[in-house]
Image 1 (cartoon, rainbow, N blue to C red):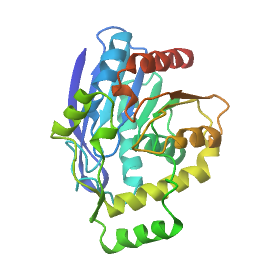
Image 2: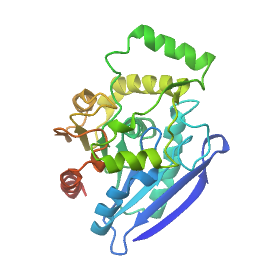
Image 3: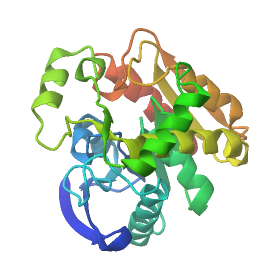
Image 4: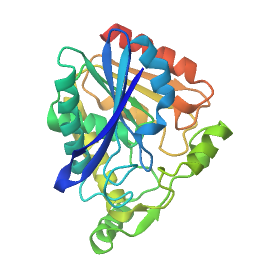
Length: 277
């Protein structure tokens, strides 16, 4: 396979890192990866190693404040910064493969970015695949707490509020150790502004998801401890598409692509893609 990387100009002149893995053989389709909070595009090598030999090209970026891209870590002025950055990159990928279907694959926070991007920018996509989507406001967050988070986001926008628990990433100790030792994974706390923007984005998705009519595959580990696993069912129920599939994987944690049972996950994803190319 061929690996390429580079940078492009994102919002407010930011330098955004991107990379791709393409097959030596004929290309079937493109998978565009939207990664999760605090991580980066380089953590999807299991997806790369499974799908590139099958004829799929994998493209990904490090979002603003993540990985090799510019920006304060785990901070964003507005959630639209992620969507606008993805729009720029999607246009680049589309220009490189104008005759190939593009599927947007979003994990965790990327599972929130992906459907909102499809709503806000109306891109030419063959379908959405979301894994462990951050699509539901946790039940323990009261309206008062939401209001307080919005105030903190204005008063102290870069204050740290919560970090990702590495133990919740996967049941595979090697994956957890690699996550903890990865210099491109942000191990500090997400900022108050980002937390508030995430909550607003979840609320926005709930209001607008009925307008999503493209094919959608939603994949969720039942024992996810980093996002509310009920969010996958919620997202499935509120999406307007008549072609939507929900796969729940009993016992799996948040990163189903990095769980011991990932071969089954990839087999399901491969079968769904085969039906939609």
